[in-house]
Image (cartoon, rainbow, N blue to C red):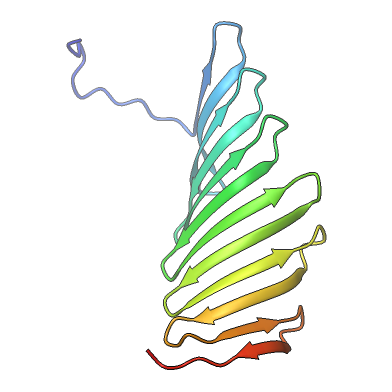
Length: 143
């Protein structure tokens, strides 16, 4: 289809896309000076949420009841996957940093119950409690 108005620009702080029944299905907006795109199911519940700020890109995928079940956060020095259980109110977070891999188990009060870190410069393994105290260490060798 040929554009009848080349160079035409539409500007706004928020665009809302609705289906034939008037249900909100997508929103492109500026939230707190950050661009955001939300995609909703036929009941209007957010299933996909993509945000961008100066330092981080976040993608959250929700289930049919609404809460985020899978999240992806990408920052300059870190990549994180967040797996959530709304029923339990708990999360498992897998983080990749420049020289380490970390697996965190987070409770419903947002406290880290356990954390397992692997330094990528060696094959060792460390398990720490919520205070950061070393619980278990398996020494490795430098690679």
